[in-house]
Image (tube, rainbow, N blue to C red; front, top):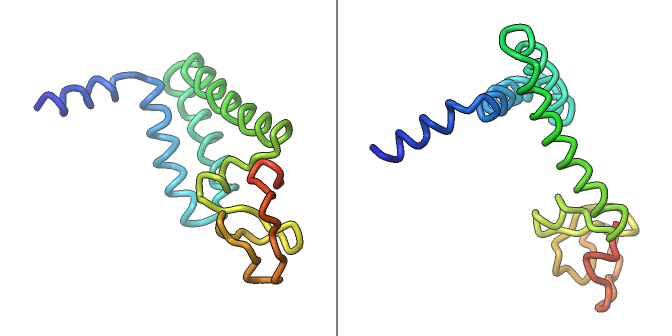
Length: 125
């Protein structure tokens, strides 16, 4: 019962509600369009509907969080040459054919490129 009350308090926050609506619209949009396009459709639609029905401050905070996440991702990618999404999936990109292969792979299964032993995740793009 306490867990239910804490979840109820969590959903009372407008920022959490905004992201829940965005997630629901994203799931719906993924049925019809590509995953990357679905993100932008759902986020812009949620922003428009939220501003039309509620306030302007909540979408502004949400977009600030989204842009901070993208900035963090691009800073990691450009300065340290780490692809965060591939790293989280346990994969790396083959420099020859640009396929995603397992992080511990010594040879690319697609193009037979041989990875060097000293090549680390941070050196790959």
